[in-house]
Image (cartoon, rainbow, N blue to C red; front, side, top):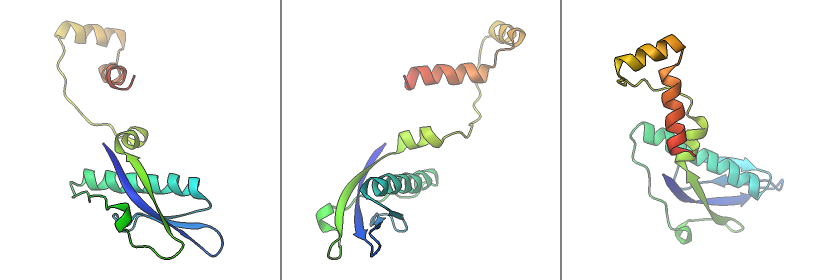
Length: 130
């Protein structure tokens, strides 16, 4: 799932930026420049959305960028958050699934030392990620 949220860049006295997503309280970071700010806040947004989705929490709607309150010198930018890509990058946790195969294939796989789990993962990756 792709999300897009407005974020606020606020310049600090040392020239760095405080970057935060008003729709996601607590989603804030600090960056040396715009590129780093976008990268870090995107990661923060994805992390928060991942936890909210996992815990079946309500994911907030994005505000209209023109309605975001900001102080003089601040500016609003839009940041996309590809939750599927984020999960793919960090999703190393294995999920146990039960599958059924014909007995003769199970015997053949066992004799050959083939991992049905690995074959299934490889097949699903080839099917969905290629």
